[in-house]
Length: 569
Image 1 (tube, rainbow, N blue to C red):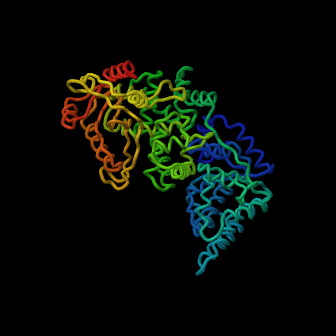
Image 2 (image 1 turned 135 degrees about the horizontal axis):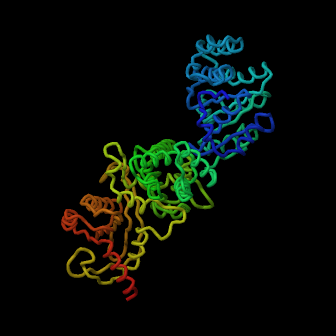
Image 3 (image 1 turned 90 degrees about the horizontal axis):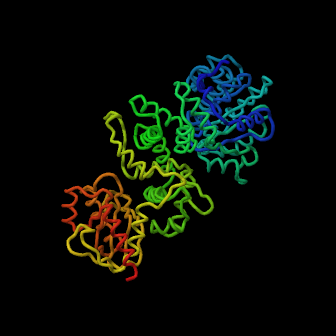
């Protein structure tokens, strides 16, 4: 079989699953029913599906048009679209498609009267003082049908990132024009692909859209467990490596069946193994955490890109980031509007507008009444991004990486959907909610004598934004793990990591105190930091100078026992 440049024989061998999708494409290209569309998260395999189909159906007249690679302007798009069609129809996808974006090269390479007349019509219109951009677009969009009807063939077009057609709606309604042309075509069949899922819903599933009922809209999901196993087995077989079922299960659980994540994890595991790290469950977890927490990791880069473009599509970045960070700390089921509003200290009507913006970017989804991440791996990325950790390997050898760094990440951020127990921050808030004037030994808080606990009326996870940059950088998200109000107001931070608390943690809390006192117009009486592994000597000195209470992990357990013991007294 002769394969076009876009899909090699090795990729064909690795292709997994999608049998139902291929059957649907078969029916579409045979002229049965509506045109077809697939929506799905980026890197889920939509483009891979199209390229695989083209590579394995050489007997059919097919084309792959990626709108992200075309100039989305009324002047250039018609020329490049026609050139791309020619690249596939006459060159069978062999060579470089970019060469065919030049209309003069196309007419020189392809001696065909229909090609010449179409390109000439577009160029002549473009030379006019006031070009008719709609007419130029009609030349381009009608071209595939004119070719296939002339030659008595069915022409199947895969159009990737179909929603980008909307960028051409400056001087006329491109979607209405598409409908008027597509509905009259007999020998051209379309498969639309798109990663902006809400836009595809609007284009194909909304009754108000001109394309409603013209396309069948399907979702392309992650691999199932069995399909993930099949892909991984085929991939590692290339390197004569056999994975145990335990490792397959672990890789599937971590990546949730996302094809791109599985491939990236597999590559990272092989790289780590080449440096002497065992190919076992611990090695798999180390590979995954390196991928998600290192700027060198493909998963990290992908998540960073998706997060950035999602926020670019929306306004009020700081508020959106605050919502994202709140949901990243919750379970995968997410939170309802009321709880998000309570945590962010905004009116539900305001928060709802921001949530709708995030839904429109496909970063979040709404299931029942809860808002949650569309991609659970993205949730873990946001958690790690907020911590500010980077496991980039450019300046150090893999063998020098501290094992406890991976253990720390595993403990704090590698959470599965069957996660047991509550987050340490939630546990601390629960402990503080039982404060009712009890007197405890000062040694539990890094002080001499005794400490009288306040009578607490409420304790919340506090989040606000320094929108003016009065204390922090502009739009800095200020978060407090536990804000206790009552006879005294306490700010409490929880540092549950495998390192002692540093002076910078103390300094940050004191700055947060100043911000809250100004923004909330109230006095903060006590600052308290709880650190799993204690405090550096410098941190203890800084805390003493700022009158900050200090409690380590063991002391917290003693505080909890004492509070429960004295509850109600």
